[in-house]
Amino acid sequence: MSRYWSAVVHGLTPYVPGEQPKLDNFVKLNTNEHPYGPSPLALEAIRAVTGATLRLYPDPNAEALKAALAGYHGLRADQVFVGNGSDEVLAHAFLALLKQEQPLWFPDITYSFYPVYCGLYGIRSETVPLAGDYSIRTEDYLPGPGRRPGGIIFPNPNAPTGRLMPLADVERVVAANPEVVVVVDEAYVDFGGDSAIPLVDQYPNLLVVQTFSKSRSLAGLRVGFALGHPTLIEALERVKNSFNSYPLDRLAIAGAVASVQDEAHFQACRRKVMATRETLVTGLSGLGFEVLPSAANFIFVRHSTRDAAELALALRQRAIIVRHFRLPRIDQFLRITVGTDEQCSSLVDALAEILGS
Ligand code: PMP
Image (cartoon, rainbow, N blue to C red; front, top):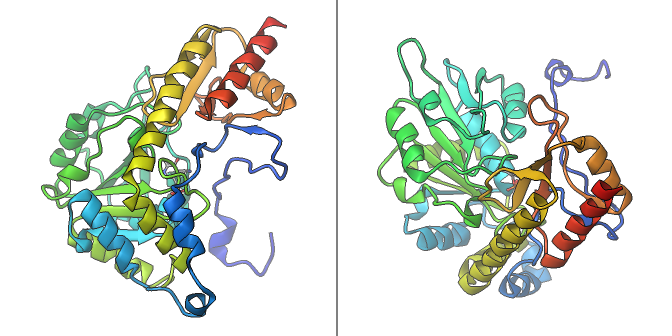
């Protein structure tokens, strides 16, 4: 607190990211990173960037990356927006599209950055409770008499639950709300969901947001993107160009373009994560954990008798980090990132030991 702060700063509740430990002797299963690393072609492209080009500003419009993403998803470049991680893309969407007179709707249990952006930009919001099985109830997002949102946002699969909304239900929500923008945050969709991208041409109120941080294993490069109708993209560009002209540096643009071009690496790595997830689910179910159905690169689990915070602490003492949220309704869950087979079996062995003791 300081008298020098702008008034708005006093009222902020900033997002708290998962721990990034300074030492690397941990089995780190707490921030949903991908265990296998990016495409070698991406690393090569980053290495090929020279001092002569780094001397110069990057392309403010990242046209090469927009063209690569448009080509990959069968869209035009004017339907693509890129930013410094999908967090930045989401932030711009909140300001550009979701700040309306009516409240923004999102689930009560979801990505905890959404209420933070609402606080930052002064956006009214209304949280919609998940069903008892922690799924998003599609019906709750259909407007009715006296119930109308100013916009809608949800992750699909949802975070931190991992639960997927079938694409037909996503379409129902988008089709039922033609007056407002529906943002589908698909950070984890490549691990088992059907993307809403094929609906973009049909629905001018749909914005799909994705990231290179998860399925493309480039969390450290900070690249995210949005796909939608050119007028939605224009709104994002207007905000971006009122904030930072060069959100993507030359290394990020080069690495991301090459990543999009390496389909074989992308497919092989995401399949491996999905296979490991199934083994992990079997292992933890065998130890008495309830595991919510996951279409993401993490699982959300609770034990029938043991306290989640105590389990997280006992794992940490064994150099394994998972994420525990001290939040209503989910404080008995642990969110566990799907790592390599070896990391996941270390986790299962450690939990077996903890539970046996
Ligand atoms: N959306 C969701 C649901 C997430 O969990 C995350 C990761 N914290 C993001 C968006 C942001 O990811 P990034 O900024 O790395 O693209």
